[in-house]
Structures are given as structure tokens and as C-alpha cells.
Length: 102
Ligand SMILES: [Zn+2]
Image (tube, rainbow, N blue to C red; front, side, top):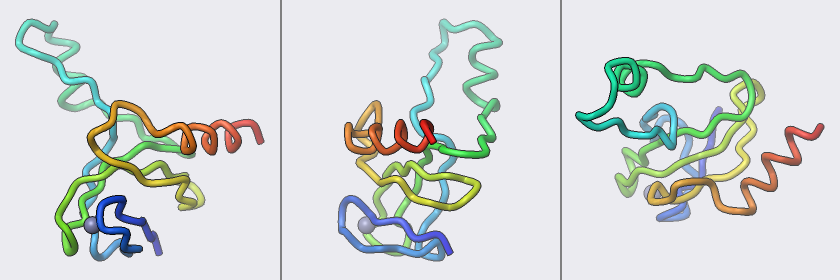
């Protein structure tokens, strides 16, 4: 079972308390972008086997959106962090680099 720690309320929430929100850190495309860039923003997503950055909502808890770094093959969670960031915090980036170096 997937268990993620909500970075806002600190609860270890299992997947039945969470709602998935897809890939994290998408670059939004505006009305002046090309059709291909806007289509990719709307529909194209990475389907990674390995470390993936994802959006989750603590739907049956505090209700807030947060981000998680986890391995989609092993379900190992490398960390969760605020959704108001443009990249994972340094300690999670270090864990990702250590995992990728194995
Ligand atoms: Zn929460």
C-alpha cells in the first residue's frame, strides 16, 4: 500500500485518503504558445518506470495539494513537499541523485 506523509498536517496517509493529481512541475503554456506546445501541456505526460514527481491531494484529510517523489516500480517514497515550490527541496534532490547513482 502506498503511504505518503502530508507535508502540511504531518499525517501518514494511505492511498485511500489521497487523490492523485498526475505529474508535478508542468510548465504552463499560455495563449501565445504554439499549438504543439499547448497540446503537449494539455495531454502529454511522462509515464516513468522509476523516480517520478507527482501531485497528490490529501482529500480525506486537510484537503491540500502537495508533491511527492516516489519510485513507480518499487513504491518507495523519497519524500513529500509543498506544492508551492518549483523543484523538490535539496534533501529530496540528494535522495533522487543517490538512487539514480545505484
Ligand atoms: Zn494533510
